[in-house]
Length: 434
Ligand code: EPU
Image (tube, rainbow, N blue to C red; front, side):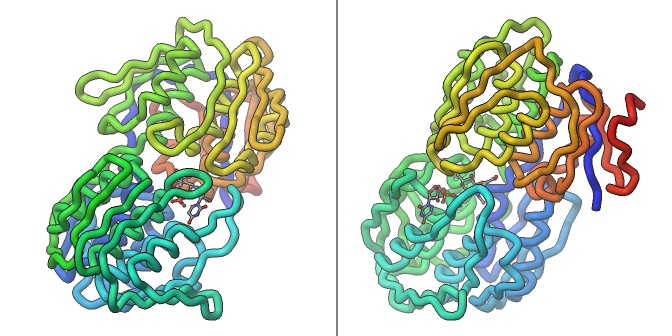
């Protein structure tokens, strides 16, 4: 097993490009099943979750070929509408196959993924949407069987106790393409990744209006065709690099993020006094060299609110800023597995229900430690802490990071970080600087 070794304390400087957004690419890959014609997807990130989705698509009968390292050609001439436990157990996002199967064939049998470390992740809203469309839904041996032979468009309210649902919106939208008549989805998610899916579906020939808003209207029954589409840049990866530059007091330019970061995130950077600027071409300039940063309060919310997927990275950043910051998680109330690990590095964060109370300090430098990554964004937070900590940080279970950050160590190295992957057996903690 590989682990990450970081020698912290180096300013990050230079230019870095973000990859395509994982959370846009996954549902769009599933949506390729909606047509029997080839779809070409550009800017596909090279990630383990993407490789899993490709193997699932092949498993259900689609042909998937790489045209170059980031361009895929998917052709689903003939597909089944069943995804096995073996195929889907490693990735929750595989639930978005359900909508694609329903839209294409009127049937879906998909094994439900198991538990998730970031909290409960029910799919009751997806099921509500399918039922509203007239589907019969049943659970058999861990498989959700949905019969949508007679789906009819209707008005569906898709809001839940935590607001809208991203994958639920993708699923109901794709299923509604196979219904007769018009479907109106209210309280739809409007994350940029859903907008990207809608734009892809539109290129396939779907009639969708309200794109980018909380009300999506979709006409069922259109014959979809092949198309070419470029996946948007990853706003969470961009946000992670911004935090990295600020935490290491560096100065970087971030390219490739088509302007997707919400104002809620830029507002937080402004509130803490950070110099973060987006140019007209989408390049983000971050200057962490002359800073006197202030604490703040962060509340995660559905888009355009502050994203839960940047919460862990912000906890790491706010730990290095003098004063008390409060981070409240409104999407996944228990998504704080990074906190005990950050505290082991000398951070002072108290958890109270779904709030993290951070007693930050700019003078008390975090100290390197042996750490355990628990999920994708927690891993990113630990990398950030390691980059600004003194001495050596060793992070285990970094396969979590590979789900969502392409070539992360290489990109950080190009900015001047001292970071490498080593075999676990080769790790000698406190080995000093190389
Ligand atoms: N929820 C329900 N019922 C449902 C569906 C969701 O109660 O039927 C709740 C969830 O438990 C959660 C909230 O609603 O409290 C939002 O969940 P959502 O369905 O929006 O999440 P998701 O679609 O499963 C996507 C991303 C996550 C990201 C969330 C929130 C993908 C593949 N995953 O998950 O990304 O955190 O939206 O923005 O798009 C990550 O990239 O690290 C990641 C976890």
